[in-house]
Length: 362
Image 1 (cartoon, rainbow, N blue to C red):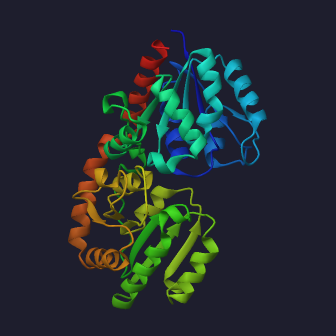
Image 2: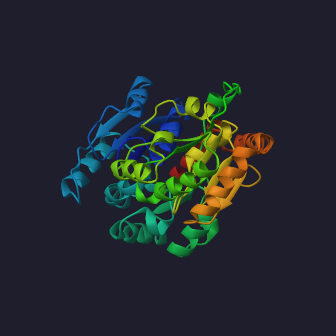
Image 3: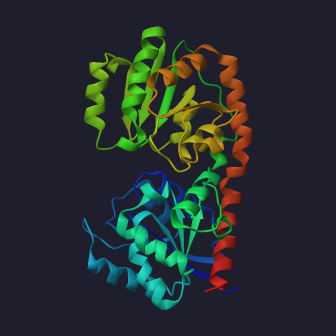
């Protein structure tokens, strides 16, 4: 069987939701059917994702792009796609711009996964290019949730039937067995998210300060790095909760972190379909999150949804779950049951079918 030459283009393989999703698909995809390469806009930084992909024999090309629009990167992208004899391109985030000229001129299809609200996902130039390519049917937007699909339809003036839906994946093999957490009196809230404005950690810290004033045997664990690290540490000191908040930075073993926690929290101002919530579901954690983007598609009986920028209501939900173990367990089991439809084994097959279908239509 002749392999299909597939190029996944992405800004980098740093820790993040889009990067995690692309990494999982790349690991699970049928290597007997697809000849896969990654093209990263920026330089190698030796991340775990890079090391693991290289270990399993996936070629990674680093274009060493600098900041801002870079014309030389278009040329490097062209060369990398040509040398791989690429038949279909799957783009993520801002990498779509640099792959667009090649796909247009070579008459190949560009699949672009939309990881966030379309109006928030990309700079204006990227959105203009994608809008034109979608209209000409030279590129296909792939949605990660029902809500994001509706937003893509509205923003790019496309019929929903023209937008394939493939949910974000979670590797449930890491969560097959529920390990009993060592019992103590501390209720641990965990948030796995970049320390950036979108994730609204400031509201989360304010909510947790209220929780602490009512229930001292609680702890907030923050996994992730970002530009707001120092500001958030200072805020935790100002709120007098710094001794009860752990800033862990990037954590490689997220499943173990989840298993050591009681409740997952995410206070984002906007979202696509957060992989970290899916991981929390796989770990049987109840979820408290803001009602944004695709979050309501996956948080139902397995958690509590709060409108954005409502720290007191968020705190009330945190207190409710902290005080009721049976409710936490019930929600956690509901989430685990729901998580099966997002298992990477199923999601990778859906992407394989998309690649085959759109490669044939090029």
